[in-house]
Length: 485
Image (cartoon, rainbow, N blue to C red; front, side, top):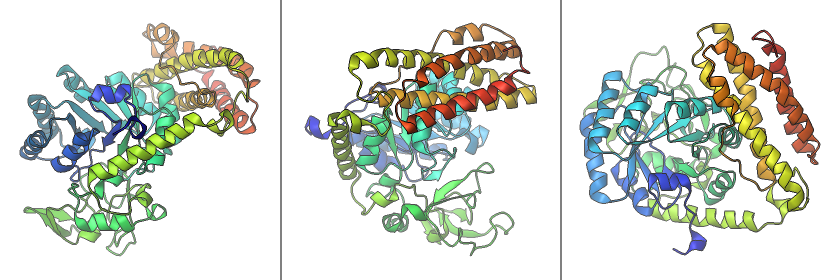
């Protein structure tokens, strides 16, 4: 491939040891050895979907990937959806097998991260909020995956990907990948241009020759439409409560198979002697028989881009080629077209440099405060104080996202540095005292926000900025009970 049709390496792709910043989602059941080897062999990075799978299958699939390719790959585990004894055994197996990387999802499990890191395994954590991204970073994750609500399968957060990505980029210092509704080159190029260091592909790779999904699922995906996908809790057996999934509609979602929570258990299929129950989280696999169309037909909002079943390498090559073309277009566009929001108009570079420096410095301090709030919240046992920390953190992460957008509009990338206030605040042992100090900083920094607003010459930009300022001010009004501001 020529450089003009490939994507540049990123710190995250180099960390994973792959050529292209294209990651296969660790989809349970679907992402088996054949698909993982195809993705990693192409130059991306494949994750085996091993949630709740027995050790014999995990060991067999790892061996099969290694027989098919020398490229690096990983294993996806989900602590919250796995019995603890099995989870411990799965982690033991990944360590014993020398798996290069493990992707985790749902609640942040600090103990699992610590065990994997101690064994020299690279840890990625998929999250649905900036708060969880901060928690994953504090636990020791090497990178995080921001999953937008557009994603297929289990969806942890409720924010659209682009808004979530901005907040996560603004809050953490580790590399960030993006997931949710990404199935063609344009969408991939768009999030890479926004600062993601890799993209995670799920729906686009279900409808491939190597996918372990059943042909029934693949054909339904090809015919599916984004507007038809829906978030539902109907498919819940084997997972924690209130775990929504994005699927294409079927008899279950239309209410034709009874109430998912009161109906008697009903077997609708079989997989090598294992019963598959109605309302379970199982999606149709090659190894299954039964009423396949009544199972969970996982699909993200990128399904419109999936119009055929083809080899994974062929789909990846097209996505990479189109994404590279999109990034060239963005890079070559005149400044007014580089971003729909312009904070400095057509000011000369020399005039923009001081503004960029101020925004970078403010973001470093705001990121420090976000980390203080997130880590202090985890230490607080007092319910009212913990609730308040949640409210304050929500405003803080929103503000960090606003600063990321401001820098992007100036063709500047956010610096991942964390400001000195983080160390100063965390040196205080008393969480209330720490929050009181953070409150005083928050009040003092309002003047910095207000001064920078004068540099905004676009109505949309001003509205975005003012909303962030109002969110901070609302929290400050409530913050006074924590301590003197």
